[in-house]
Amino acid sequence: MRKIAIGTVAATVLAVGALAIGTWSGRALAEATQQRLRGLWPEVMTMPQEDRMLLVWLSFECNLTLQPAGQGETIGCLRKAAATEAASERFQAPATQLEQLLRSAQRAPGA
Image 1 (cartoon, rainbow, N blue to C red):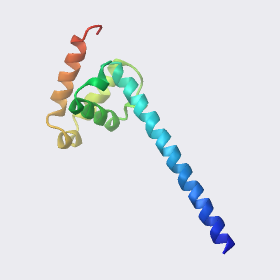
Image 2 (cartoon, one colour; image 1 turned 90 degrees about the vertical axis):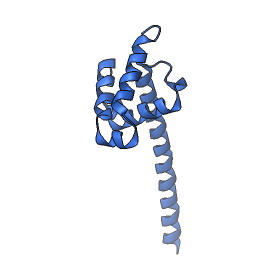
Image 3 (tube, rainbow, N blue to C red; image 1 turned 90 degrees about the horizontal axis):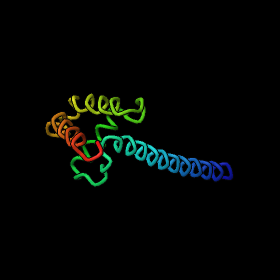
């Protein structure tokens, strides 16, 4: 009976620890992604929700945070993800939408 109680406590501690690590990792990944997107769109958090959803999905699809830093690398990563079948299944004309967002970033003041 004592071994079962110890095992239950140990499993609970491991589960809580894994949840905490997962939550922290998710937040860190979201922040790193946001920082990379701000390099092209400083106003990314005030963009329409549909645009943000596309950019975030593309970022995760191409593993943006694992790619080399830089605007060219970010754009290449997003374009690669936008060209996938998975992107076309989730969004209407994702490559076209991305190109429109990239053009708007180039026209933005300070760009």
